[in-house]
Length: 430
Ligand SMILES: Cc1cc2nc3c(=O)[nH]c(=O)nc-3n(C[C@H](O)[C@H](O)[C@H](O)COP(=O)(O)OP(=O)(O)OC[C@H]3O[C@@H](n4cnc5c(N)ncnc54)[C@H](O)[C@@H]3O)c2cc1C
Image (tube, rainbow, N blue to C red):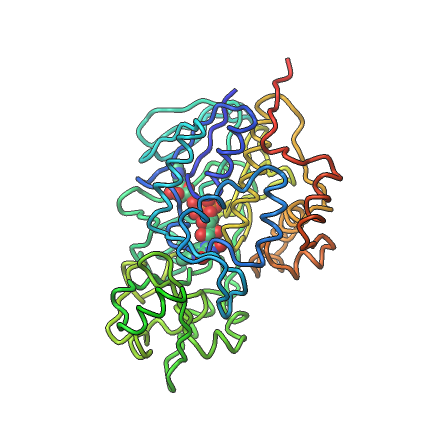
């Protein structure tokens, strides 16, 4: 029984690992030369507020990617203003190699530089994916973990053109999945009410910072640099990036906050882009440059334009055996969302391929409540005006599902009989 995962970002990796652990043969297809997707420019692997969700995910038997974040951490357990306590930052430059190593160790087959172009289907059943090189890969169940980025079309129409970002469209062609063939596709709305949102944070080589700032970054893992008087705030970019909410907070409005993600200072979402045009006016950044996007401060990639509607098992609308994960499955903000939806999609792809009924996580669990919430919100125009994060405590509290004590978290998973479910073999029904 074979599960085919399309996309080697954080959600595709998570789906592949769980599908393999529960007994499927797995092939993961990635269009670029690296695994990691947007995780290669992320770096804030575990804000402290994600701890509860990761504890639940580990009790379920998933969260394999979190082990990698811990192994390649630049700083662990630090308090970063604007992010929170107990933050783990990881070295983005080591992510691909470590993801490849983990897939190999788990026995997951993966192919790089192969892009899926289409699907061969019988009614709602995907029989095989068709690759751009003319070959095909057949499977019993599939996971579309291709992200929600269209590439040049969206960046030209909704952004500020190609900014030479980590998506690398000029080299590998535009990204895109197969859920779009049948599922209802929606887009997150930006501050102008238009579809698509422009990305935010920038990577600044630490070597381009002043010597004292370099020292501070190495020692503390972050720096908070007050905005000089009269610094230019890019209002248009803020609206396209949907950041006004975050920019309301003094710590973000009054400072540029940078974190050490392995040779790069990553500007946190708010300050970086809003002050992009004035970076060199900040003390310590007088000689700085921008390494990602390569176009520098001009703009950023456009994302969240191709979100596929799905049910609570992550099965894509209109399909019998296609599951969606990560950004493809909703306007999600973080790596944590990619991990929890990827784990569930991979698990259910394996169950589906084995002829078993798919699992819907109970809403008493944090992830079950979150998946249900986002699945419903993304079907409404109002709901598409914001993004959602499984580590947003306010959302989970509002859903009555939040708990923060490890014993309670594990107890809740045990109570619904799901302890270790993501690593318990599933058997084919004859
Ligand atoms: C600039 C930036 C900074 C961020 N920083 C953080 C952060 O610090 N912390 C955090 O928690 N979150 C952060 N995020 C969000 C986080 O990176 C994403 O939520 C996460 O990467 C989504 O994972 P994904 O697997 O769903 O999609 P992606 O990461 O987009 O991966 C999709 C993968 O699918 C591949 N693919 C696409 N089409 C095809 C095809 N046709 N065939 C084969 N493969 C294909 C792509 O090449 C890519 O590798 C950041 C996002 C951005 C844009």
